[in-house]
Structures are given as structure tokens and as C-alpha cells.
Picture: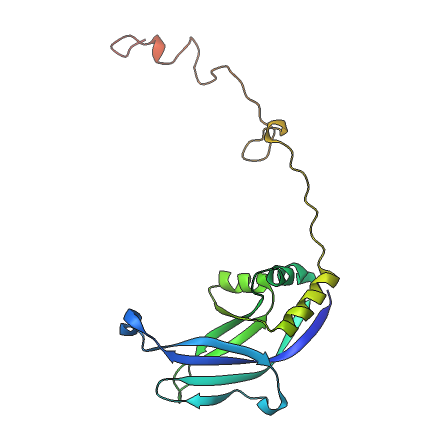
Length: 194
């Protein structure tokens, strides 16, 4: 497995008011606003860019966007989709002096990463990737993705029978459930006696 650093990015998270009937239960929500290229002016620490009663916008700088050669299929699935995107996994974290805010935990371009996070009940959101990132993702998948060769499946009629433990099984037309002397209900009289 080899690791390739595609670029450095910054993640923007926004708190916005909830509209419609859902506002009865929740006054606001956090959403992924954008993933942008890292700039030197962003610094290294998260910071609030805008804070009003209605909205908050937080910047989380210096996220390394890494591509792993053994996950080339996950990147290919993203690249070949109608809208290639960034996947950002985030959690709501609270501190004693502030209200809870969304904090990114990871960023990826792999469908497989997003699937694992969703299976673990994490919050995952997407934003479209820039054309530059898509072009670099395409170059990476062309270099490392090798499609799996599909093998022809043997028709069901030619496959051997096995029991639930994987042992060979056979089919018989004889009635094995009847006891000695014919058994079964056919040998009983109207009173239920043999």
C-alpha cells in the first residue's frame, strides 16, 4: 500500500436556522458548508469566521487529503459517479463555555470510507469536488485501479447439493419418515387406532 497526499484542504461548517415544521423540535442545525484548498492565511487552529444569532461559520484548516493505493476502487466509484465529491465525517462536540458545534473528524474521496463511517452511525456529508481535485483523482484511479475480472457463474442446475453445513446431500423419493409396517395416518382406523 502506498499513500499519496493529494492536497491540503480546509473544512467549513455552518450553523443555520431550521425552517418549517422541524423548527418545533430544533431551532438550528449544523451542516457541511464547503471544502476549500488550504491557504497560508487560514492558520493552523479552528476559528469562527462569522457569528450571529441566526448563523455561525467555522473554519477548520490543515486537513491532509490522502489517497491510498489499496482503496483505488473506492476512489474510482467516486470519480465515476455523476458528481464526484468530498466525504466529511463530523461530530457535534460541546465544551463548558460554548454551545455544541460541529467538528470534522475526517475527510476522504473514497466511497468505501464513507460507507464504513455510515455503517458506524457517524454523520457524513458531501460537497462536490473541484475540477482540479477530480482531475487528480482521475489520474490516481487510472494509475492504481485494476477492475476485478468477473468469473462466469456456473448454472444452478450443475451445482452439487449440500446441506446447511456444506456437506454433500442427496435427494431421495422414498418416504423416510414412516416407521415399520407402513406407519403414517393411512394405517389408522376411524378411531385413531392401528
